[in-house]
Length: 139
Image 1: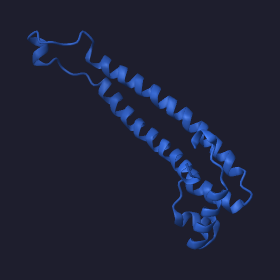
Image 2 (image 1 turned 90 degrees about the vertical axis):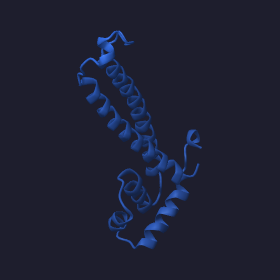
Image 3 (image 1 turned 90 degrees about the horizontal axis):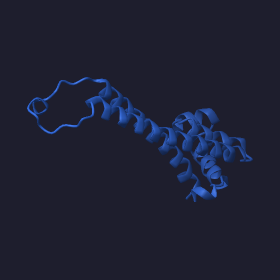
Image 4 (image 1 turned 60 degrees about the vertical axis):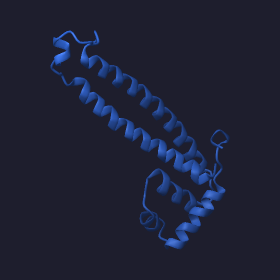
């Protein structure tokens, strides 16, 4: 795995967590909505002995556990990546990677922060990625 792929994988994990939080909120809304009994429930059709909202609550609890695990992995990965970026000798390389991958800045914002042209920002970025070491567990 390249340094760029390493940093992008951390961003993707963050985006995945955001997506799961949206899903969790949807599940919570569904779990608290009370529904009226359907026709089958009145006529003796097959139905679960569990209250309708109980399945929703179970799904919420399961999703919360999954998100909690993902957040723990994200925190560990971001902490490790920050340490590795901090070890870069060139302050512009450190700033470029922090702006781009940790602060989510656009290239225009990175260029403004660094006070350089687009070409120079890309050069600094490429150098930083060459100097950044990827942890063995991510390779």
